[in-house]
Length: 278
Image (cartoon, rainbow, N blue to C red; front, side):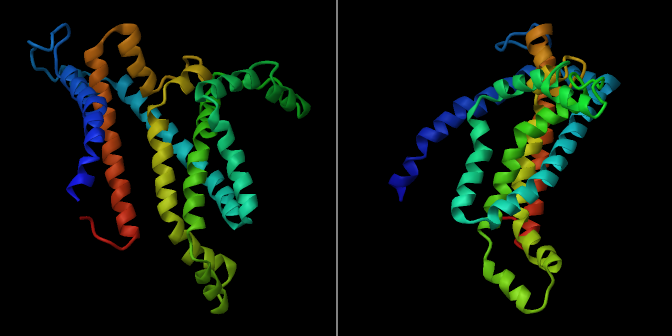
């Protein structure tokens, strides 16, 4: 058993250098005064105070959380029926449908997002379709709707695949027993299918919400700089402004928010399974 545990040593070393050490450096920069070196620095919390006392920064945080919630809800409403249809299909059809969903993910996310610029821009495909219905003058690009569309397009497959996996693992004999006992299809779905698929729903929500709340290139490309989110703010502090200390403080704030959300999701999942947290 000891030999098998030693196999985890390379992963532990990798995790320390690639995860723990960078996060430690970000945390250190976040409590340093501007211009201090790592060897000798002065401790300060002014960067955190600056963030929480400026209404503009709080507004950006609120806007980021709001669009992440919208993205997650839309992905859930669109993804659950699709996942349900795939799970109820024959095995060969399931494989083909899953391939259709995952195939676009083989292309870089940045390239896929760039493609939406051409489709949403003036004279693009979508605007030409809208012209047929007399809506050709509608501004599509560089709006909140464009950012939301890009988010949903990029993160929807994560929701579908997680829910489809849970539905595929479900014991069909439970559905047959429910029908034999006289339950309607709606009652069967509400009391059996939905509760048993909740682990996939929770995992899908996690995989969509966390990247959506911190995304920066989707708002930058489809929002055109007009729709500024927390991810853009962090990028701006590190690359444009050069305020690494303040950017690190914002990064740590977002890391704490994400960890708290993951803890909440974990507790909900444990409660749903009827177990107790170890």
